[in-house]
Length: 133
Image 1: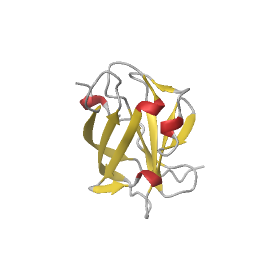
Image 2 (image 1 turned 90 degrees about the vertical axis):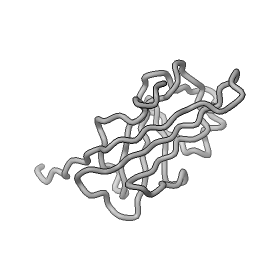
Image 3 (image 1 turned 30 degrees about the horizontal axis):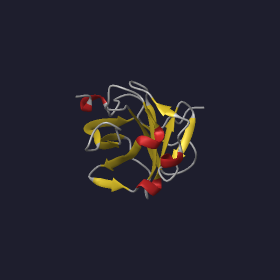
Image 4 (image 1 turned 135 degrees about the vertical axis):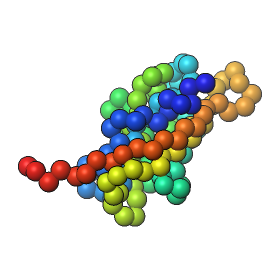
């Protein structure tokens, strides 16, 4: 139902921490917020290449987690409509221009017998790096 809203079209950018890669903002594909321990996975495919979870971090309202840490994050939540930042590392710097970004979110919802979640894919534009100071 909320799949088309997972990948946010704004704020796609290169990392600003000196590492190669980027940041894409994502929303939860569910009508309620969930404790982060209920977020089983947020899988990213960039330009047809899966980005391993080990090269990705998840940040929500200023708190950053690896995907190994999420199952133990029982005191933090991802609310409906709230944007989370999915920061990822790549072998080569991202080139400015259009990139195919696909995200699949898997959620564990207590009253559903099958995993919840959704998937979305968009063409996002990475702006050129500004060289002015």
